[in-house]
Image (cartoon, rainbow, N blue to C red; front, side):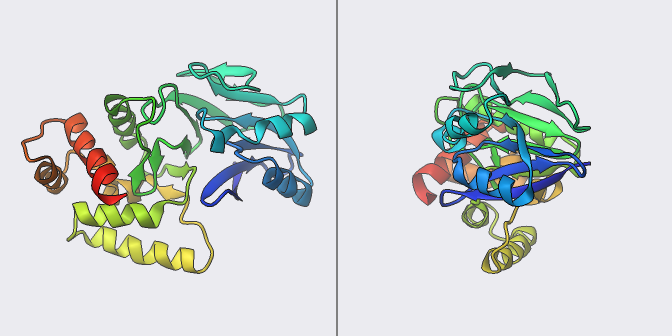
Length: 259
């Protein structure tokens, strides 16, 4: 069993730190900055054992050079399909990451779409998904494709409902605003908005998010739900068939009219 600690970075990033009781080192996911990671490690009397990287964007990898200077022998795992300086263990679908001294293992999932080579890491019931899936939302399409991102989200929807989603940004309230556009009568969205607003007002993260909650409130995981399809068709001005078509309409709607 492991513990996950959020380390705040930039305006709205989370660097996730994974530790186990009695283990003297920790793993961090997507360190966009060096300073916050080093400060937490020193406070907790931990060494850095490894880094997991989901994709190449600077706010996820900018801290790697500084961490390598301080911890030159660490393993840095990252997507095989993206050239990321400092990554010395390139991983792809199905790879199993095992770290000496840690009982937790991480399975690599190829989850392209936000970027072409994006990967996610699944450890026990925790999903570290970078910018593929957000609480109540999903990442924009950069050098990936709508087709790939839609398929990655369908895959996430098939994970056990008790899976905890650790995404990389605190976008939840904004995403719930768009979810309310898509399903304005949804009681689940209204209740979640109240709860997550209270969390933010008290200075607490809205993450992790249970996958069960995402399945009930995240429009990008609900592309087969009639109310979501109808809303997406209303925006697109035409009939839509299949998850990819509905997803693409939702993503375009949010990009062009909401954000």
